[in-house]
Length: 115
Image (cartoon, rainbow, N blue to C red):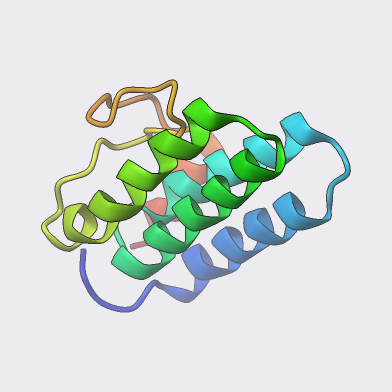
């Protein structure tokens, strides 16, 4: 779904990214980034920006496996989104397969249905 991210989706995405930056709990940071990832998948640049934020957090936490996994995802995020080839609901973490679809949380599904 190449094009501009709809305002409602963009607002939800930005809220999750802001929450990831401002929370003091590491697991909460990841949870917000994962939710932002689900929202961003159809749009190349927000999707890539989300993986860059995940990479940055992994480096800060000295998590080599996660950081390496994010490098790969940074490379494939924009082309995958542009071509509409992304696994719906995937949280974007390195511990999850690149092509593994996952259930979309109900609240995020409602936001994405407005597209």
